[in-house]
Length: 88
Image 1 (tube, rainbow, N blue to C red):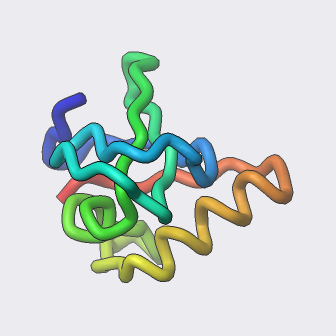
Image 2: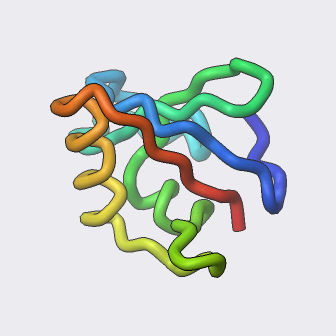
């Protein structure tokens, strides 16, 4: 999956898939599942996600830490909630 600037990605929750679909790193212990507007899904390591994605807050986009990415993924999975992040 290619990350296009300004595109929104739905957070599917934390992922057990051990490979980052963005950089190819293996043996991941922390990853989240993402879905783009076309319905394509990918598992992305939280470090890659923090570099590639931004969080919208009060009309502006802000950098997001890897811990915050993981926290969002856990909340989505635990509460069956919906969260979106925007590509930088």
